[in-house]
Structures are given as C-alpha cells and as structure tokens.
Length: 568
Ligand SMILES: [Zn+2]
Image (cartoon, rainbow, N blue to C red; front, top):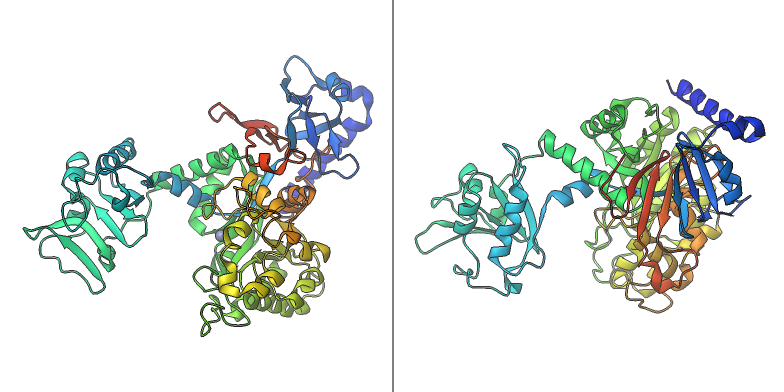
C-alpha cells in the first residue's frame, strides 16, 4: 500500500521534471494557478527568492520571475497578483491539538461580559442550531468584575432562574474564570438529580437560597455532581471543521496533531476519503496502545492524512511544578516534579517504533524528563543500530541540562518547540528554576541549532493561540507583544528570521518525513503556500505582529482568502 503511494508520488515528480526539461511541452500546458508580482521566500537554497510561481494540478511547475510564469497563463488559469506581498512555503504547526481548537470555539466564551444579561445573550446564541442531547458549556464568567451586579443576590452569586427561563430544555454548564465554581441551569440540575435534598460534598458547596433550593452555583468539589456527556458525533464533526477553519485562517497548511485516539483517526480518515480535509494532518497516535492497534503506519493516498507517529508523555508541566527536574524546584525545595509515564514505557515505545517504522514523539519539559527520554531512546537505538532515519522527537524540550544538548544531535532527535511558549513562560520560569538554570537550559534555541539539531515550531494550540505569526515573533525576539524586555528574555537564544521560518517550513516538513514534497517552493513539490500582508523577513520587529494572512493555499487550491468565507 505504502509502496504504491510512493510510486505515484515519484511518477508525479517525474512528470514535473519532464515538464521542466522539455520547453516545447511546457508551453503547451497552462497553469491552474499563477501567483505573480510577489516577494517569494522559497526556502530553496539554490534560489532563495523569487517573484512568481506557476502551479499545475497540485504541484509547483515553475518558480522564477513573472516572465518565467507568463507563458503558463492560459484562459483557465487563476492569476493572483501578489502586489509585492510576501509568500512563504505553507506554514506547518508541528505540535497542536486540532479537535481542541474546535472545541474551544464551541465553548461559550464568557470572559469580559458585563453582567447576567450578557451571559444569557451568549448562551442563547450558542443554543441556535444545537441538536437533541447536546449541552451548552462555557467558561470565563467572573461576577466580581461585572458592571451590573444587581443579579448577585445569594451569597454574592446569581441564581439560575433567569437562565433556566431563557434556556429551559438544553442543559447548560458554565465554569467560572478561575475554574473553582460553575453555574448550571434547571435542566442540568434535573438531569443530574441536584435538588433541595442534595448535600454539599466534602470540599465543595451546593449553594442554596433562603428556601433551601439550589441556585445553580456549584463550588469546587460540588462541580463533580455534574457529568458533562462526551461529544455527540455531530459535535465532533463541528469541532474538526472549526479547527481546520481556524488553522487555514491563520495560514496553517499542515498540522501535526499531538495525540489522537482511534475514533479521532477514524473521523479524520472519513474526511480525507471524502476530500473534506482541507489541510494536511499528520497524526501522532495517542499512546502505545493506539499505535499497537493501528499496527502499521499509513498514509492517505492524496497525502492529506498520515498516521506515522506516537505521542508519549515523559513528565508534567513547569507551571504546576510537574516538570521532572534534576534538582528541586527553586520555589519548592522539597519537590523535583515527576514522570508521568514509567521510563520503561518510553523505552518500549521506542523499541516498537524502531522495529515497525513509527516515529516516537515524547513530551518532555524538565531537564530530568528530557534526559530520561534521551536515555530511553538511546537504549532502544542501540538494539536497532540499522535504523538510521527514525526522526524521534522531543515535544517541548523546554529545560535542558547542558550535557544533554549534544545528545540531540548525536541521536538525531528533533526538538519540537513552541516559540510562543518561551515568551509566555520565561517571565516566571526563573521563579521555578532560579535564574542560572533558566539561562543555562531554558528554550535554548541557539545552543541546539549550533549543535546541528533541527527545531520545529508551533503553538500547542489551543494551549496558545494557533497564530504562527505570534510564535514567529516570539521566536525572533523573545519579547512579549509589547516589546518587553528589550532585546528579549535571554535574548542571545533568539532565532534569526531565516531560522524561524525554516522551523515553520522546511524543517517542520522534515519533522514528519515530508521534506521531499513540502516545506519549500521548488518545482515538483506540492503547492502549499501562505501569503502574508507584511514581509515578516524584513519589516521592523514591532510590525511583525500586525501581519495578516491574505491567502492560505493547500494542494494548489485557495482554502482561505482574507475577507472571504472558506472556499474550496
Ligand atoms: Zn500538546
């Protein structure tokens, strides 16, 4: 199966070579898409910059100046005049959670509302088009910040009555901004059997009014009285479609999904089969069990979906002091974090991966978590010395001990890092780690690059916004959006713009074995491009964040165009 797909791809490339080689034949073919008058950054070392590109079918046929492309423009060619704007190879998110992005969009956002009226308004908007059996969930309300506080009548909170009147039939469950309380309507309480006889559980509070009836406010452990059902099939589809739309609107043409279960893979496959997966997706199976159940890696025939990796979890996160450290936390001296998967399981995944052609991608944040991962990879690699091109990955690579940095290069482990995490975390990371350790090993892009390690970039969306522009900015400045601190946090580790673009294109493609087909703008490669409103390679740093996505082109088709709804 994989062999035949490969043969088709080779045939495709050969066709293009033939096109490029035979001038007479070339002039007979007209392009399906021509992009002219651009500032094209190709990431092709032999021709780093170009002005125009012609696409035939889903492949790049010509890269050059306008005059090179003009002969290919026929009556049926769609011509896009880039008007000098910058075009780069399609940007790739190397570590995100596609369904999560969609789910976040489907959840009612209550951050910043002025009061109860607006809460009801937003829930009503979400109620439109909802299907039988589905719930409305939301988050972010914060009654202390409301300008209209007239509704806060019982112990400083609102009561469910007006919400229940507005939405009587659909269960509603809305989490407070801090996650320590939730607000339910009558339908939810009825379904969960919450009534005047319900006792507050230990560590929680079912708030009741003067008559002894629950008000809908559930504090801490009392939130556990409500079991929000898992998504319906319809909701899962909606989440996937919203996730893809959000990516395309942000210029993302390919997405490495960091942990997908069997049912998710089934859903993606169905979309790919129907040609509805408008963005390329590379799947990391959610765990060892999922990988084993799938048996062999596989790719969808048209290259839109590949399942070839497995996601493992080495340790916890830095914020919650779960990242596994060699020395205790600076602000919690009795604690060094912990591993979340026994090291033996990482080793087992690595062995299985090397034996059966799976790429292993392990979440590792703390310096001990990273070392353990490298140790387990190395141990397995010694047993399979003939497997050279495994491309095992380290997801996050946040805190490293200096001694481990060269090991990435030696073992051929890819550092899958999120540029935006650096500027989100570095302001407080020294609290956890102390200054010296943060400086030595925190998001050390230059130290890794100097060793020859490949860094691939992303956002971990929906943990961070999916914007590659924001992550690119963070990668090249290590400054917050307001430009502080000037010169960046541990600014000597900043990436150059070329390095940052490579981490989002050519090296990102390498991260999923796609560098022969994607990641640069060269004849014969697949036609994935992102067109930007500003030239991120040359504008002053403080203008990078103003960059908008003008076009997202995947497989030769415009999938997103600024100011227009998605159009295949
Ligand atoms: Zn993640």
